[in-house]
Image (cartoon, rainbow, N blue to C red):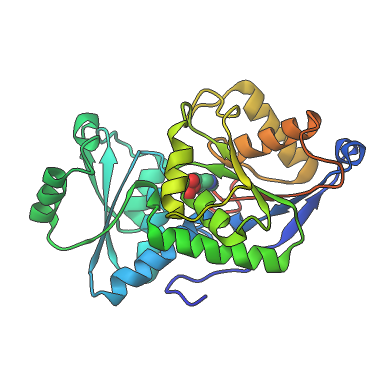
Length: 298
Ligand SMILES: *Cc1c(COP(=O)(O)O)cnc(C)c1O
């Protein structure tokens, strides 16, 4: 892949445990979190084509949206810096100083942060809001909240094809936010592999429809979204989840974040214990990143 933003090849690791032996399951982890120090995991795949496209079209500014802890804001700021293009982040809520690590990192990358009320933010996809942004900031290339657009889905599909060539597996597992990454993998696998998404949102009933929309009429059947592992909803966590994450680090040297990959891995182990997967299945968990501060973060 040729992009303004550098890409590091990433390893596939195998986890070992008596539980896996007992269930006759192989559990592999694609450490895609290691693909870039700051634009890591699925964010590299989702953002790099939009940045390349913005530059190709002659835009000088990237504009996007996100919450104050958003991996997408963190990654877009870093990606824009790497690609040498100005970036503007429209952030939900009030500016709280000192800025949290996500937002101070974004500012260090040169992203201009503009805070809008929650009420205003909820209108961000409407024409008046958009026209207002144009008036205020002039020309920009817009990347939607979460970074899911057609370019992102295509790009994740390219990652999916790469995975199929690199690794033998039966079921790929990944955490789901907007569904863009899930849709890209489904598009790549065309039912030759199964895909299982783990929703990090509570009340994610709309997600299936959203994925169908992103698949743009392509009919695929071998995919599903697990909705039982949101731990109270997006950005919410519990002691049980925190303990689990520490435990994975301790026993498998696997760093996980509490928003996305921790919930997915918890779900995978739980489903293995519940004997959902036939004996002999090879699972491939995709580490989609989210360890802000880079792969060295605990
Ligand atoms: C953004 C993000 C996701 C969600 O990706 P979607 O394409 O929005 O579903 C999953 N994992 C991590 C670590 C992320 O940062």
